[in-house]
Length: 350
Image (tube, rainbow, N blue to C red; front, top):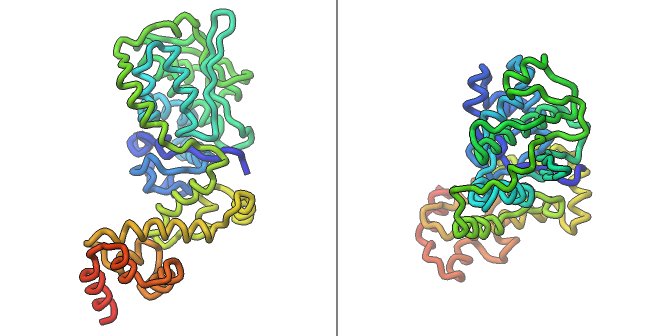
């Protein structure tokens, strides 16, 4: 299993519109790549980086657009950073902004790293992944260069241009196509993927910077989970929350979303001192506590939201977890939900 195989669905920002412009059906492409269609509306979702790269490659093939990833990155621009962009944009200088990006990138992408290096007056803003043999990775790397170019133009001005665009792979299309898209012919089969530019731009101040706003955003981001291998159980809980209402919260489905073998997933969870069933039970218990506090949700709806086929199966599970019925639990917890829940139970029995 890759050490950090996940990204946020925020990486799909603008995919629906861009795919349609390329003559593609966005939902069909997502399904074929095993990426949940609902993730387009849930940017905080966690996706398999392998499936994400596969999606880009599939779109490149179906649209007959060799530079799909690059053009998509140029289209996305800074939208792909979400709240991180507000942190970046309120930094003191461009150099500080790029350091903030490097430090916080793991909030949204656990499969890649941002590098910022300066050597003899030349800066490299690089994009580096831990994996080298994923199908579609060249598309993802070109997408990152497109996003990076738009970020620098947002920070340094619309006319900003790098001295070089570096790509680790051979060209995916005629070099003239690259030059038309980027305004510069990339250096192919390079040691790094990224942008080279004069380091003096790092000292350029950002006129709109607000230290107060920067601190507020930094405080907000500090509460987010970073995408690291140590947080595997947390990822699975989030996947389960998304999958439960559909009744598809199985280990096979979760493993598929994460692009791993179910046995490999179980083995990894065992190393973390837990299991899939334990995480499933814990997630359901957490959710049911919240659901039973909402007066408009019936027992039938609660059972459905937790992925159960019927109320009786849910009721048996609830009693196993808490030692009492859902109605008794509400009474003991001081929630005035008994009449509504009782009405639901009577209706379910009729």
